[in-house]
Length: 304
Length: 222
View 1 (cartoon, rainbow over the protein chains, first blue to last red):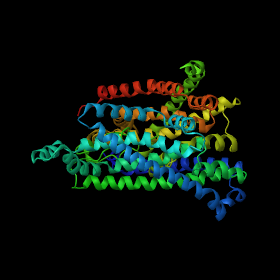
View 2 (view 1 turned 180 degrees about the horizontal axis):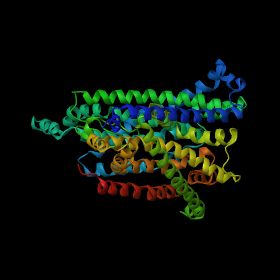
View 3 (view 1 turned 60 degrees about the vertical axis):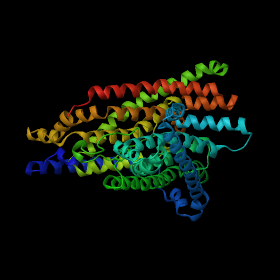
View 4 (view 1 turned 180 degrees about the vertical axis):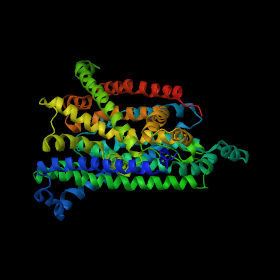
């Protein structure tokens, strides 16, 4: 159901009512915005002085860009590792052999249910006692992100392969393909198309979660932008929060837009018989043929 | 194992803090999320836009930034203080941040639920003369809530796991901060880690099962 049918095309009275509601809405939004503005103003957060550092090239060169690179590096490495982890464990869970399927299932379920920060702390403190001293912030962050997001992606892979209609593998078996060939030549190519949007939305989650590195002092955007920068330019905490917030939101929205585009594309694609896979933990509603009048809910992004 | 027994009381206390946080933030998120979804489907474009902006901004901001901002920005710089006791103050600040963050996801789950309600339901509601507000609260939302019990359960489970990030908001009495403190003194301890993980599993798994069961019971047969 599209949201617009919740109300009729307005007649004269409804038009007046809507106009009143719009005025009230504007007043409400304006009040909230003004209160925020005035609150910031009372603490003189709009002073040019504390915003000035963000106009200088040095600030970006010394603090923001190195932090951003730290974030992107952690996200990129973790994403590649998580995709590999997810592919291996997702396929292992589909195995016909119980001795592969059950341990793989256990690993996936366990890492999915551990709060990510606890995992990061644990690896961060465990690594020095195993491998000797050193800086393990990057390794701890990347490993934990790989284990958690890899486990979620394993579920996506499993769901993707399962979403391919049974007739596809039956047909493949009937022309004499072997199990390996069915998986490699028939199921996976179709599953990957169906999985793409879910994978990209999970990568948004991964990118957001790199900010947890802040807590173990990994040099990421949040760390350089929100801890080091305000310490150097006294008083510029709020501007710093706003600037790095905008950077994070921009990055994630670009990735989300990619996910939405991929989903739209895979929904009308003829290359696969499988409907798009929804990320686990998100709603399974409104996807697939015949659901909710076919208006199609956007996939709900997973949080964490 | 000895460590788990030695530090047991401290861990348990931290864990109770996580539960308290989850309850407060969960209630807050459900209320705000419902208001947000009402805004997002309302006939008033301004409110729709405001709801959309809120959801998109909050959903794409890392929780760590939200919580660090609520501690350092809202409280220290802008002077929003809930209590003179620092511990109580950061508890409410973290609840506020976590609730505001989770509300965006509650809103999106509910909106997906509204999308499953057949068009005919809203049309019938309008045909018998219900206003937008009446049809939303009497016809649409009750059915939407029933449809999203399981996804809402997932949102809540994720939120419970997210209470560990409270450390970033300066709340140093919950289990992740406690674990860090213990690791600082004793080094990494596998029993303690497993103990806390078990605690979280005991907390989250029943929610998954319960909401799964409930969603089947409440499912609207169409």
